[in-house]
Length: 383
Ligand code: ATP
Image (cartoon, rainbow, N blue to C red; front, side, top):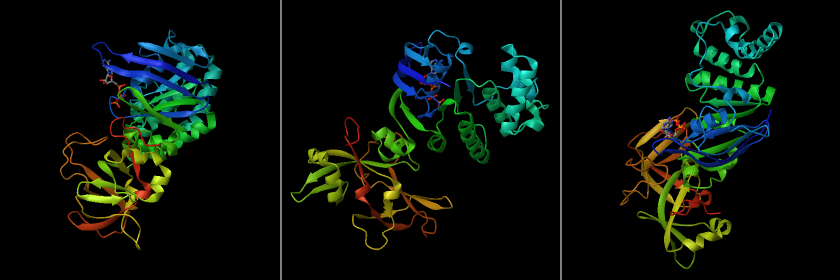
């Protein structure tokens, strides 16, 4: 096992695309870290540089205390698992599992022992004589995983290893990955764009956007305290609702102005974030998790909204109610993580049995004590 230290890692592709931009990231010995970010943010390129499959333009990568910048992949003591499994079709499962040991000159009895042990751990014992074509997707994925663990490398590098599996298998394999990590404790760097994978597998998550590291931390920390608008909009599903508003100081307290709405800010927010006062008379970005917008049960403090359901998504255990952002009237610019040109919709999370359908008008209560605020220029969260 080993720690992996990336310092100032940068990749500029011929033609000028800056795929990875000055990334500093230390992965502790035995840690499972997940790289997430939207398509094209540079996560695969970063992983491939750690693997040695891609040259760096600048920076240093250390694995287990050794600078590996000039080491070819096979000398880095890493094992990589790809999305497409990359099994040898003409070899049996046993031969696929033992391949990397055989080419390193490991003796036959030892190969057999390690292959046998790996097959037992992954439940592949009865499949050892089959060829990949005669395996299901999940079984192939397990063989690919087995090929990585069979020679006990210092580091596992995984690039969307579950994305070719159906939803149910993905859940099962996620559990299996956690179990393997608990068993072997191998330092793992895992690339995905799947939030649930990131939140459930990672000891820490590293969020990338346009080649730059945005925030690194445990899943709960990223969810509870996103550092900027990008992380706020990216971590959490459904995504955080965001809107640009004005903050006004009416003398007796601060009021948020969103479109035609005026929402007095609760004292708890001001006590928590004294910096809010500096935004009086200016624009500020408001963030609300979907769970902070609910049906008004009893008489909760805070603003009410009458909204028209644009879409209602039933998820079994709960319902997502999508409605036009209260700030949308008069605004044409999309904000933060919203897609360019997409209408600005907000989401409220409602109990499963709420009798609401698309087109219905519903009253919801907004819990401003759970609001987030961001600077509209730097996009950084207010402390
Ligand atoms: P995805 O989730 O879609 O796989 P990613 O976050 O893994 O995306 P990368 O594959 O690392 O992103 O790509 C980062 C950027 O570098 C993209 O803009 C991509 O177009 C560019 N890029 C990747 N490989 C090359 C290459 N060989 N030549 C030129 N540009 C490249």
